[in-house]
Amino acid sequence: MPAPQQTAQPLLLPIAVAIVEDEPEVRLRFEDAVRAHPRLSWQFSAGNVADAIALSAQRPANVYLVDLGLPDRDGRDFIRWLVQQQPEALPMVVTVFGDDEHVLTSLEAGAMGYLLKDAPASEIALRIVELHEGGSPISPSVARSVIRRFAKAPPGVPMVDDNPLSQRELEVLRLIEKGMTYDEVAQVLELSWHTVTAYLRRVYRKLQVHSRGEAVFEARQRGIL
Image (cartoon, rainbow, N blue to C red):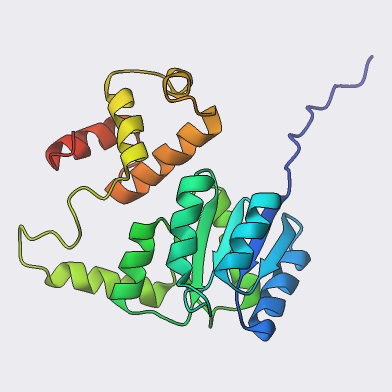
């Protein structure tokens, strides 16, 4: 009797991680955490925005850990550059700043996660995997602060712009509203399928929804569509 065939397990490609951090000790701690995790692969490290842009153009990563207080420019400037140049990339802020202003402006710039530097290096590695698998990791103390701010807002007064979407994200959502598939949207906008899904993931996060239908409904409710 022939032995039962075993189902081949899908090959998990390593998650390429780049680190944008100016403090050598912190940078080394993050590098060690990435190298120690079996799912992660260290791509490069940069100590300022200029080097990060140059290196990411040569060796693009899947996930970027970005400090905000960089010596040449604000880390949010690099995140905005990533959103435009590598929309499928996943930037995550890792910083000492936990106040509402830094958090909200970082998320508006395109950050997909927000962690404080006091988190253990092993936890940061786990959060990188979580982010790559569709989550939006935020340090608990930061999340509580943001939630309290929203809870204190007067009814009917938005905390942020009612249209948080970028022009490209809005273009993608408008085509989705017309009933187009991901492949059709990619063809119309001359983008890859992966880039279209990356834009939609950003739309879902910004509108706090989980499906195309919910995104279209929420955008209509806000007057975006």
